[in-house]
Length: 237
Image (cartoon, rainbow, N blue to C red):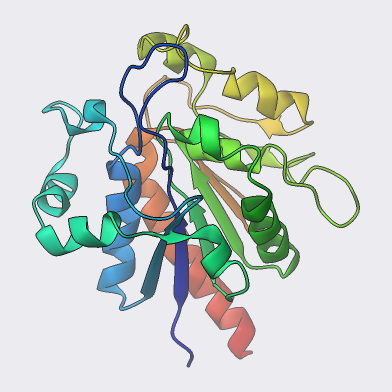
């Protein structure tokens, strides 16, 4: 059986455009999937629009937000070295992956939605019936992806992502460049959210998997692993 390959796409943006407040990757939205994939022996490629260093949102490193898994990885020098030498999207654009996963963090709101190379990677991945997954603000990377038909990928798809009330709870309403929940709905998606804000919610619609917020990181990792196994069974039949 071929080695399962996972592409994890991360942000290069380290501050909000309108305030200079620090942001970046939300660490747990990377570490849980990374750990689950490593445990299975899967091959992981970290990439970002410009390659190189990945800024981490300082909010995701605080005591009440940083879990044990993220803390271990943050203190792991080889992992941090890997994180700060991400490949560019153009370097991996023509490679084949079993999963393309968009990690979140507010930084993604600036460099994910309009990245043409990212859109090509996602379109190809989705149309080859392979897994496309995104969590929290990383879901913004799906907003402007169009299929060969010219339709938005997320049109009529069940989907989730960080909602506007959660943005208010995070005290980021005035900082963010757009309302992710509203934009997802504007493109005709069937937007879902957890009954209680800031709790886990993962939505699967065919080969599209989305997670609502950082609290969905653990569940997201489990669901993606389960869907990989399902895809494996299909391809070996």
